[in-house]
Amino acid sequence: MYPHIHRYKFESKNTNRHNHKIIGYTDNMIGIEAFHIHAYYGISSYNGHTHYFSGFTGLPIKTENGHIHRIEGILESASDHEHVYRNYTDENIEYISHSILKHAYV
Image (cartoon, rainbow, N blue to C red):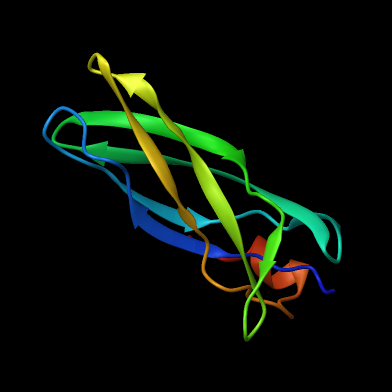
């Protein structure tokens, strides 16, 4: 399997009468073939406050055209509340050379 990344885009669970958009790209894979994961991290802001998030995906889940990963966790506490998030990455974006990714703007 070639080095690859995944895009993710979903919303957190509603807490304190609002939710947050969680958008980004994973880092390159860690591991081999069916036993690999990805690190991810980011910032989500809403109405003047910010939550940080980071973690590791689950192992790959085979799909018709490739695979996805489960992504879940809790946004860091801010303004006296937290948000739970749970969803899946988009299908793999394979065959992207590492040198191209170094110059990408996300």
